[in-house]
Length: 370
Image (cartoon, rainbow, N blue to C red; front, side, top):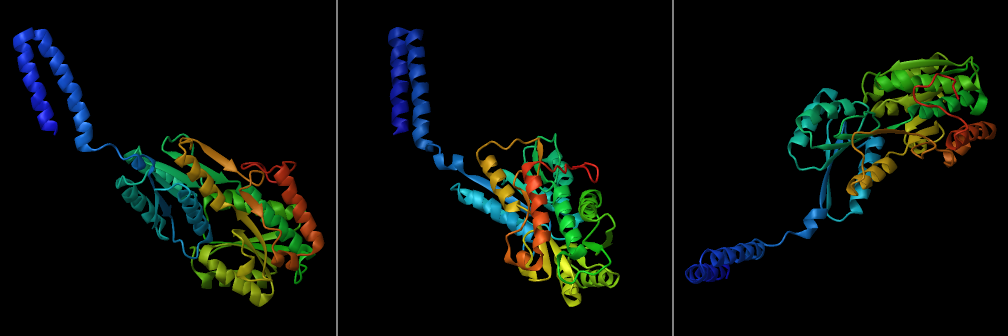
C-alpha cells in the first residue's frame, strides 16, 4: 500500500510541474514528504509503550547471599520494589569473598550495558564503583553501607554505625555488670571481627568501647580478628580464648565465623551480641542482643526513588536511629528472657534518646560526646 501511495504522488508531481511549474512541484513534494513520514509510522510499527516503563536492575553482592543475612535483606528489598513496578527485571550476581575480584566482576557487569541501575552494599564498594564509573560514566550505582559524594554516577546511603556500635556496647556494659545471668566480676567484654577495615577500626570498635564505658568506665574491651569472614573454627578459638581471660559478653561481627563465636560462648555460658540483623534465634539464651540495620527498608525505598526518577546521584546521606534505619531489637522474647528488667529499662532509655534526638552520636564525633 505505501508504494502505491508514493507512486500516485510522484505522478501528481510530474503533472503539476507541467501545469503549474516550480510552485506546484514544491507543494506536491511537501505533501509527499508528509505522507512518507506517516506511512513509515504504519509500516515500521508504533513504539511499544510498555517498553518505556521497563527497567533492569543488577544486584552485585560482594560475597554470597546464602548465609549472609545483610545481603539477604538487600536482595529482598530490591525485589520488593521491583515487584511493585510491572516489567522491572532484577538479576543477582555474587562477587565471592575475594575482594580483589570485585572490581573486575563489577566492570564486567557494567560493560554489558543491560542494567540501568547496579545496587550493592559494602563499605569497599564506593571506591570500586567510582573506578568502574570512569570507564562507564552512564552506568548508575546505588550503594548502601558506604559513603561517597560528588560522583554523578553514584548515590550512597551510609548507616550511622557509631550509634549501632554504641548501642551494642551499652548493652554489653549492662550485661557484664550484672544485667544477665552468668556475668562474672571481671567487667570485661570482647569483640570478634572478621577483618580490620576503616569502619571497624575508626567507628564500630571505638563506639562499642564508648557505649560500654558509659555504663562503667572501668570496663575493658578485648578485640580480636579472624582474618576472614568464614572460618568458624578460628572464630570459636578466639572467643574461647577471650572467655578464658575473663570476657563474659562478645560482640560478633565476623560473618560465617560468628557460628564459632556463638558455640564457644554457649559452651562457656557466656553471652553474645549480634550485629546488623536480628540474631536472637541463632542461639536462644546465648544471643542476648541485636543491634541492627534496616537494610531491606533502605534498599526498597531507594530503588523506588530510582524507579520514580528521583534518586539524587552525586550525593550521599548518612541515616541512623532517628531516621528508622538503625535500631536495637527490644521486643524479642529471647531478649526479654535473657536481660534483666533494670538493664532493659536502661537500654530502652538510650534507644529512645537516640530516636528523639536528645542523645546525639554523630559519625566523626568525639567518644563520649552526646
